[in-house]
Length: 356
Image (cartoon, rainbow, N blue to C red; front, top):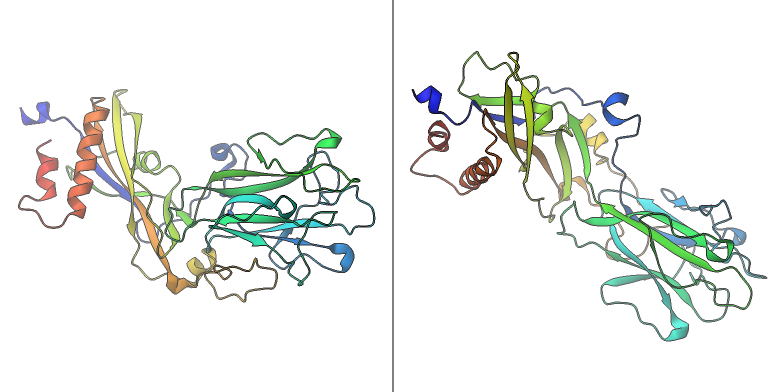
């Protein structure tokens, strides 16, 4: 009688097992696209190639506009050296969340939480204007304790509006012309913000435990990738970073008899306390590196060493049921997760599961 009235078939815990295999997406799984997340932009600078300045180590130079013109911030100007924008990507430093243009000729002052690119990596003035008033680039950096999933700057481009160029789709155009002189193109800066990511290693997820603990559990090969579709992760976060909120997802399975089973899953992060191997340290880019010239000079101009980072892994608790009671199962799973974090209880968590 109790078996017939039970609301769920299995309660499953999915996560990272010992000696897990690396998760390598196939072309069919990722649509023939590179599924690796793009690192956020952490630094910007400007250089004058005509004056002998070169791209700093670790930086990329924006060489062309969307239509193929030279991405010279002094494009079309006479008797002024070419100036190009460079940027650097990374994970172990708070990323940029905004980019701006400061026009000193209009009496503008930088915001309190912004930084101004005043000099090039080689010590020259970083004024990008082809006239006498100074025009400088500014940026805002994320707080050290901000969540890694916030919106951050991931792409930058230069457009020439007098050549018919417009901001690419999803890009924000800074409404300030970088050229203030009588001669020269109308040069504008655009940037795109995306959800931030952290440096991670992805492994094949596995079922760590399930209830009831019987031999009839035949879904062990199918459930893990539904609960953790991006894999069982080891992520590297700054020490003061806030963890992301737990998330809820649903899915539908079909067993060998053709019956539908409904899955309700809550995914969250837990501290990863096991020591990392040298291979894992290399994948997370935590090996000691020297800081090269060309970094934007501010309070965060060096990468955090490994001892200032924390490591976390994702885990999922899931209910498999014949009934699509998704809202009720969501509240129940959230309650179980809160209980597991609040210390000892007079009634064990397993008792709540067995009486569902």
